[in-house]
Length: 366
Ligand SMILES: NC(=O)c1ccc[n+]([C@@H]2O[C@H](COP(=O)([O-])OP(=O)(O)OC[C@H]3O[C@@H](n4cnc5c(N)ncnc54)[C@H](OP(=O)(O)O)[C@@H]3O)[C@@H](O)[C@H]2O)c1
Image (cartoon, rainbow, N blue to C red; front, side):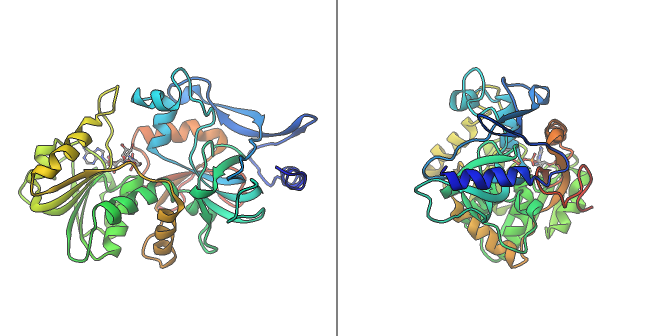
């Protein structure tokens, strides 16, 4: 950070409009309030503490975080499960002690190689450690926030929305008239996937638990199935494309519910084995695909801003809208994680951090 940027950051810090957090400067540098963890575990390992504001690298921006989305990936990073997560993100404790990935905020400083952003830009994207008043983000993972999109809605778009877009468009190649089955239609990824598939003219069947089916219908699903009372992949109905986000059905079952030249896109699913999370199902699908008439695929979502840009175009056109369920304050991140893990959130939840204009801990939209 150059001197001018530091000054701007300090001014922003002293102007802090937050009603829920406090920020101070010290003789040695600027500090901020953040949620941190010094070990893996459930939500009880999280603390709201004061830490140093991070410094952006040459190709990074420092963002004052107004709101941060929460998602299953963040939950896995907090708990360190499946254990494969620890091999990638820190064996004994997370290398990044501040959880959170989605964010919307204002750029306050930028690295020497950043060309697309300047201090003052309103942005949205992925920043490691977004449950904090400031976070650094790679320039490649951030884009400008479209003006009409409210901060709290923008903050819940990047990870889940971009994953859904890649599932439906890049890997599923969903087009008009396709019969599409979305397993896990009421969740973070699924709530976007239903809307994106509808925007492309597909006939969508959304699968979720009974209490959330009305919400799935409200997203535009043509048909809904309660997985607790019916088996959505019993083979009585066959689909051109299955987007598998929840339920962890066996490959053989999923294939029976696909047309002969259908496409299966595996996004994920909770409840796999403790070491790999059941990634073997995805690997088996990819290995089998060249030898069968159906296309069986999985992917790890790219965080590049170009996917987010495509989705934001759909959001701007009104065809897709973030389905925001609950808002929490920074100090309530443990509650948000507990609610997410227990399946109490329909669609998305957001943590409000330095945006004073939003209500907290109440349903944003019924
Ligand atoms: N491949 C990638 O790069 C990538 C990226 C993002 C996420 N993921 C993974 O994708 C999965 C979903 O993420 P998310 O953020 O959407 O999670 P989420 O918000 O918790 O949603 C999970 C969804 O699965 C549904 N579900 C639960 N049990 C089911 C069953 N037996 N049959 C059908 N649906 C069932 C839930 O329905 P109810 O709530 O109604 O019970 C809900 O709609 C996670 O495992 C996550 O780790 C992968």
